[in-house]
Length: 196
Image (cartoon, rainbow, N blue to C red; front, top):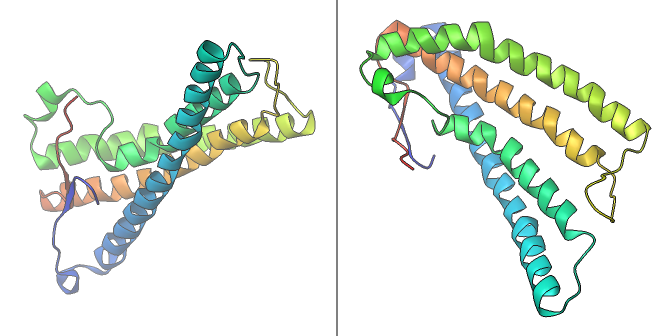
């Protein structure tokens, strides 16, 4: 994976649980990496619609009815679907001033408790709730009211449960990594620092 360093583990020396969990973690990480790479293709309609609107509006005095909706939908989809990829790469916000002072084991405990008590239950709940919104939006043929084009909005609404589902799946991998850190005092995957 991009900026992540996977620690080499002799799986034959592991307990049966870890012989199952370590490959599962790697498979989930690979899946999230590929879905993140696929999500990046949403940049194409985002850039195209933005450039088309600027060119048509300011050079040809012919603004579009569709560019605002396409930009809104592709940007929203890119942001939501990319969140699991960001979680995989350690790009979500942490208070590094405090976090860097903790031992690997303590970080593992904090992450373990957070994933079990907050993250996974909330992602599961939000996935479930958002599926109902997609169904209702599809049934009433909900349309966007952003501009004159007014396309159907349920495909964008469908991105929400998919994004939460991807976050839930990656959360399982992160939970297993934090459990590894608690048990061994070492990291299973080390994230390179991302500075903005």
